[in-house]
Length: 217
Image (cartoon, rainbow, N blue to C red):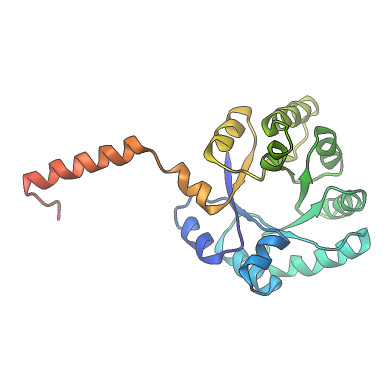
């Protein structure tokens, strides 16, 4: 499974990228607004921090304007992936862009039939929002399983990018289903490293080592 970080905090991205475990970045207008910085400036900086795809989202709602915004965003780096909403106009723009070889991430997916449409439009990634799905009384992982089954049935190449992840269990469940990507806030990625038994074991090892009075260096 690929790991993307969902943030516009360039310091966090740089730190996580240094692990070698980060495969890409997703952003959205809300995350950019929280950064307090200029949109184009942030996206260009992020694109230099990682080799993998950087999802940059349009804010237009009609197809022609989306395409014009996409053209501007694509100038910010060779690894820019255009993020489009799962709307009628968004899917028309997706088809146009993917026909031209542009990577597209279709976002705000909440049903398997929406995901089917995105795949037919040639999307590189589909972003189902599991956390928000859970919030309204549905099981977000059922959605992931349905999309996975449909894509496998027809051999669609669109990658399932699980979004709106709230905790490590979401990552585990998505990996067991066979989703291609999990995009997570930085704190969730950091939680994946944590386990109390690991911490306790390391503490015991270090205490025992200290008693020997030895040094490796």
